[in-house]
Length: 83
Image (cartoon, rainbow, N blue to C red):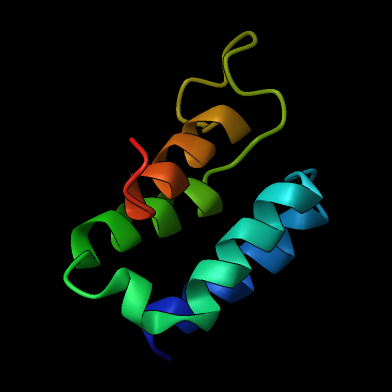
């Protein structure tokens, strides 16, 4: 499975765990247009790891390894050249 396919699958799966629909849509839109991700494998791998580690309670209590939606959104913006 290609990196973009893995990312799309992870985003869809994490939506059930509380990843906001708007963020899932943004990630799926990036995956649908591979040219937007050309030369950005490192950022894509980071985004995949972040999506897999998403927790809607990130930053609260002892969830030190979890990632928040805001962090994921920041990486999506970097991939789009907005950050």
